[in-house]
Length: 233
Image 1 (cartoon, rainbow, N blue to C red):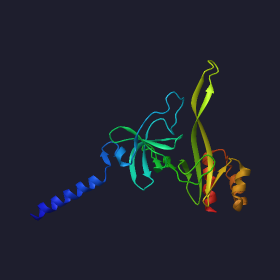
Image 2 (image 1 turned 90 degrees about the vertical axis):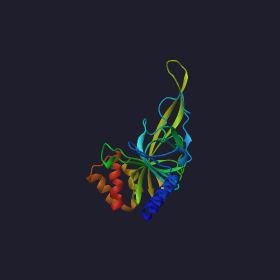
Image 3 (image 1 turned 120 degrees about the vertical axis):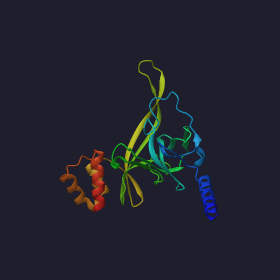
Image 4 (image 1 turned 60 degrees about the horizontal axis):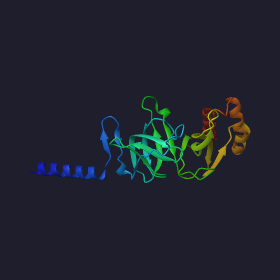
């Protein structure tokens, strides 16, 4: 009788837990997300007839989604709308949905076919600067006391077709690099003189490192190396 009661209690507990956690598990994709889990909305194509793509990538890629309230969903097919800074995803029932501005705080893409070095992390919530605000996503190139962030955003531009003379719309992509140091965002130029000004507290060490390592500061990987080195000083 005791065994029967224990089994009943365990089943009841598991049932209650399932009611509270509406993440479903599918064998192929792991944890998936329901539209109702996150107050998501069904996808609507607002960009019909506009050339190019509004997303950070054309195809969905598996990612970990961290919401602003701390909830985490793993292995969700995801992409980021770089015009609206909304997160599109494939729900558990196969329906496309999106999270409104500011609902997701971090997107971590993991390419399971390669090494963990290919993890790409996007975060929002940084101090406003230029055309970006706290809902704008940045790719985290290096995270430390001084962090290196990359802003990639899209706009819609209207142009003339040189052959037909007709007007058409297309997505334009812009990239900028930023340093986050002591809570302050600064847009950086990829040249030696500008960076020496930003790192003036370690001017001589930074200058020597650039020369010794023969860094090309227009190269993203070299720029990451420089910020990593600065964080060790």
